[in-house]
Image 1 (tube, one colour):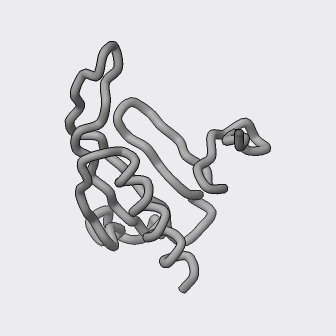
Image 2 (cartoon, rainbow, N blue to C red):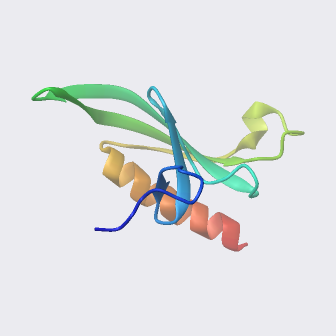
Length: 98
């Protein structure tokens, strides 16, 4: 099984940092030009667990000189966290490659 904990003890997904606070997740690094912001807006019960039912995905520019509205480059919505993370990884890889 792959180790998903980075050198600093931070959870990673496909080699990039993944931070969570409540229903908000950040994928990527503030040191890079772009990062992904995910918001879990709806959940449903699956046994004892709450499973994401609706996830909003935002590709954001990390330039703090921009207005918050202008920092959003792309946005989308997915029905599962897995689908949201797959799209997030594609968006982030493409944005950072430019």
